[in-house]
Amino acid sequence: MWWRSASFILDRNDNLLQDDSVPKPESRLLSPPASYMAETVHNPNPINKISAYYQTRAAHHGVVTSDWLAQAQAAVGRDQPSDSDTSLKSSASVKPFSVIEEFNNWRKQPDLAEAVAAVRALASVIRSSEANTIAELQSELKAASDSLKSWDTTSISLTAGCDLFMRYITRTSAFEYEDFNSAKSRFLERAEKFGEISYKARKIIAMLGQDFIFNGCTILVHGFSRVVLEILKTAAESRKVFRVLCTEGRPDRTGLRFANELAKLDVPVKLLIDSAVAYSMDEVDMVFVGADGVVESGGIINMMGTYQIALVAKTMDKPVYVAAESYKFARLYPLDQKDMVPAVRPIDFGVPIPSKVEVETSARDYTPPQYLTLLFTDLGVLTPSVVSDELIQLYL
Image (cartoon, rainbow, N blue to C red; front, side, top):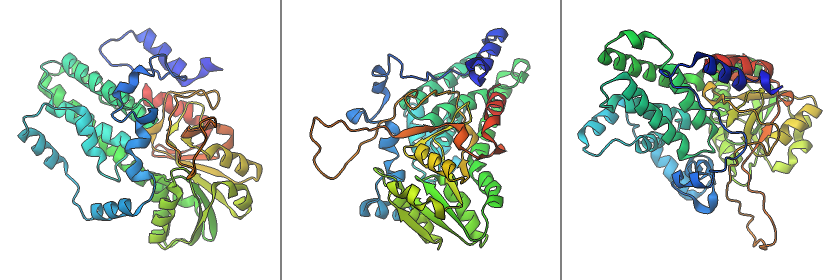
């Protein structure tokens, strides 16, 4: 059924249009390309071939230590840089503009998603551009987008966010009839609007999820999803009474941090070892998970263990809800667990492992759509079957 997928339809439409004036989204390979090892030069921390996604985000989602907690507490009281502050710093500096440095500066904000940081960085490309024609500006944006995507080829939301940004800001024919300065202003206006839409997505999803959380319910969560946390935080602020079961989330122990955040909200929370999911499922009324990416089939790619939780929930007739922003909708169609670009993370068992023992280091798995009930997105509450239609609308 591949010929009915969103990517096939979009690629066919692109071939029919044959319009080189508008950048076209690049299809992601479903299996690792032959040049995958060569691309690791773009990874700033290629330690043991570990995905940059899991290296650089460890401070936000990784192991909870006293040092990390001290840094997090210190960051709470620190003023976040505004758009005006950022532009003043860039104008005062004589250093050449770097989209990767700008991206990393935005990523220092703990509540800012990686894809939103990329969108902010691309908007800065327009702001600092010295191009004199629309074609030159589009070329600069395309090069900057490609640089961000190659920075970590394993990050689904980063690639999807960049592709959707390029589609959004160029989705108008008005540029052909405007002078360059007016067109550049419109580019920047649309870029900033897309950034605001992406930034507000989490709040929109949190409001949509409230009708599904009822008093006295028990919710199982897996991993640390800031969207899921926002949903539960909003429910707690609305004085709804519920309890949460958190999986430990080894080896990153993200469940520990999630449980800590819920405890701050005075939400009753219980921590489970990952292997206790089936044992505890009869206590659960619903499952909430986030997603690294939402694929064309309506399935999701998420933290390792999501698939087996969904299988247990389906067997015991428990609904599985996914919370994901629309910038995580990716043009991917994995056919099985191995049909994805690998994302590798370090694993520490706490004891020496003989060199002859092979260790599975994959960081995420694929959950097919038949095991999911609903997806809460900033586009609305969707069933898995309509995701492909929404994805086509996003990329057209």
